[in-house]
Image 1: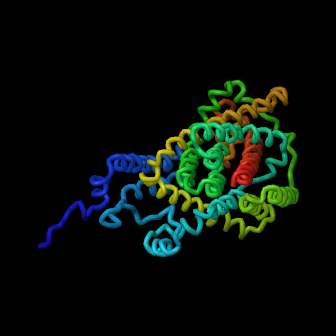
Image 2: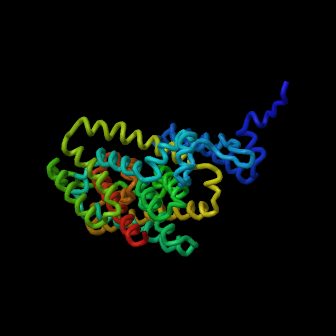
Image 3: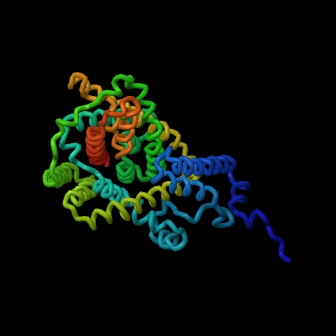
Length: 401
């Protein structure tokens, strides 16, 4: 009977034991983190649509490291950096997620599909009913993006890398993916991972920021909804097509994202039920699922332990923190301009994680005053935040590409 090497049979354990100790520790930590993400997503503490597939992918890819040859270790999930056509054709036949990654993720298509789905479930009427307050808050909520850029450069990143991580401050995952693909392709994997990790955590972190910066008496302000004008579908459709055309004309580099988002809005307002069901169902949830799964699989220890990732983790959290503070400052600006009639908590919704931050604002207000409804104003700031973050991303890409 031939000798059987138990470690060779169980290669996930073998590579853990025989590999670099730092990588081994990283794998164990990421496996535990992946399991935690699944638990917290299923419990509803974190965003389940992203965190459940991401957690499963993260735990699996760090467990499933094997010997690709006598001298090299790796996985058969995806190779994010392969560019040689012959090598790519070979690897497409081996790595089971490689076709999805290569044909939807690494070219930004998945970001456009998510944006189209967001457009279908977004009501631009909220922006149109209160355009001034929505845009003021959204502009203030970009403070993290603007402030993080020079800090990132000071910490040693190039202008392109700094812009890519600064966009995390806009709290728009597809926008971060798009910008990093355009400006820092060698870092777009860790930057995108950092972005989605933090975007999912905003749901848990921003409520504490709101309570810290907005006193209880101001959180309970009840806003006047009777003065809100009714916006017809025709007006929304007109707004969407004109805004889309103008933004594509001004910032053609981000035209795929503008077109995708406003196409979703237009389809919704046109009332084409079959298209709406298709885009808000299979397209949005399918692309979100594979986006989360791919992000988890990309969280391999070798990638995460890149020395620059620690800097990116710090800068990503800093960008979102400053943006949250900026949004609340915008809420206070509107509070003073309206002589105390505007609830400053709405400001957190200017950070454009649709509709997460709008829901955070509404929940925090209802904890103080159960009869206060600010969701229409929060959604207006939320949607405006999507537009302003896309504009800033387009400016960065245009100037630095």
